[in-house]
Length: 210
Image 1 (cartoon, rainbow, N blue to C red):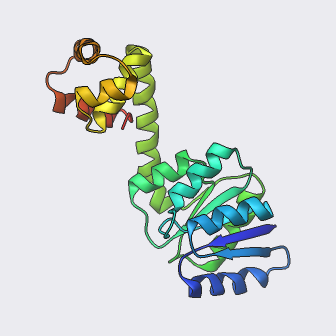
Image 2: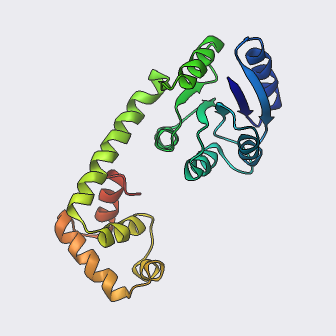
Image 3: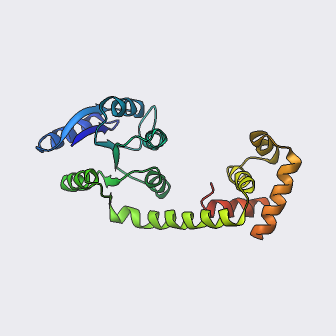
């Protein structure tokens, strides 16, 4: 198994390299201290697995995952992090991370995770991911519900509204008139049975549209 390691702490990289190279079936082909280096190393070496910290300079781990997903890169990603909030975890899984390991865990679990991910399985640390996975599934159900109720244009407007854009800014982004935006929003209010912009933003976020 060929590995690229990415962490902005050099001591962590050195310790990981020693740990992994002691295993006969693992080869560390590159170590990186920021997200840009990690992307370049993955493109250059085409490793089987990228071990990725989420909090790094230049480009964070979620940014790396986004770029790999957009490029259709086949490298499997294991997130190795000291701490992970629910939003980050949901986003990492959505972007294709196949494994999540906390740095506080025994090294044998990291090795187990790497081998399972390399074999095509998913390995997610149960204590950390149960609530996040439920959130992800709830959002997926909510997004599907919204797609069934709203037109594609209404969905686009609702997503932009959920990001805090005003009607004029939404119109500019979608290249339509502000009056058209207001008409679509009126229909969205009616379909979702809500009154007021704040209530609509809350619904959008609950349904995974933000």
